[in-house]
Amino acid sequence: MKRLYGLVFETVMKVIFLLSFIFSLTLPLTAQESSTKFPKLFPIALKGKHGYIDGSGKIVIQPRFDDAWNFSQGLAPVLIEDKWGYIDQNGKIVITPQFFEVMPFKEGLALVGAFFKSGPINNRVGNYGYIDRTGKFVIAPQFGVAFDFSDGLARIQTEDYKDGYIDNTGKVAFWDKRLTEDFSNGLALFKTNSNMPDSKTGYLDKAGNTTISPRFDWGESFSEGLACVGLSKKAGFIDTKGQIVIDFRFASCHSFSEGLAAVMVGDKWGYIDKSGKMVVEPKFAEAEQFSDDVAVVRVVEESESFKKEQRYIEGANIISVRAGKFGVVDRNGRMMLPPLFVQLGNFSAGLAWVNLGEDYIVHGDTDKWGYINKAGQFVWRSFVTEK
Image 1 (cartoon, rainbow, N blue to C red):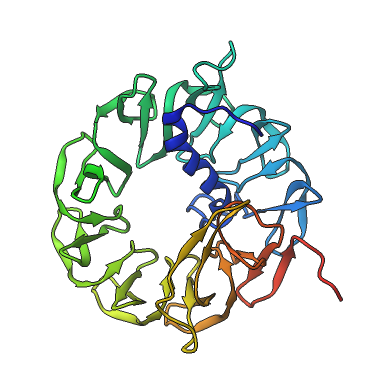
Image 2: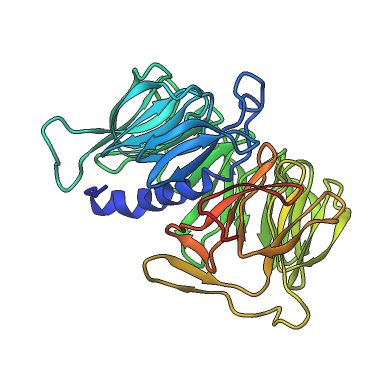
């Protein structure tokens, strides 16, 4: 679908929506989604149309949409011709396709892009607002840039380029000119000088007050009460008070998930628990967060160059050249699925998205992909294999 974007809109929003497409296939379920009320369904494509399968690979919603994303809170975004709407888990359209962009529901609301009634204005086709599960606008489309709700607040930018956060009624919680991220555990990361080399990282509260001073070289959002931060070329973890709880002794680290966090020692990745104890020794070239009680890791054989340069190649797809292949480990570091895959998504409700092509795709599409379970069995492939 051809879309028109203004410069500011394109710079900020393009990455969000394009990456959301592929990551919507790999995200773990929320507590609400994991309940029996909303059994997990997985989007598929067949002969150019999109539908859904269940965890066994059975088609439960016939492929009839032009695009389809993951379900969230019982509803899923679908594309019909050039407009997005939402379906329920029976495949019934419950919110009529009418938007130029949508995001999955989060915290009871969904971010959508509504067309200007008069047509494109200044190379933009519309503004962003938030709807409820009936499709009613709870917060009118009025923002040039907007993000999902997280921890009760959402980042927005007005048409005159004022940045801030709103609550779920649309009321402005506070304005902030700093480069900020979503709230998590009651705090949001901010940077003092955008992404410039001299920028420092700190954290603010829901009133916009700085609660953890910007003294770190970089950082990640809080997760499970801790945040990974960097200082003087070392990485460690702080709590929501800004106190160091795991010493700065790593080369890098990622956020905690399911009680474990990936950390880098030298040039290899392993996992620690919240006491800082190493529970999976560093031996991987790359390590993702735990999801569904397992984690995706990249393994490089001794015969390969462990420090092989990672580089990007642009073309029809933007691809990454990396040494090794991806596999899956359990919480003890035991290899559950051998490293056979060029690209592997996080497990969710027992299945993971697998790229069956030859290239690791950073942005774009592959026509060779499928879903695999933890036993290594494919429950769905996007193509028919030769016998």
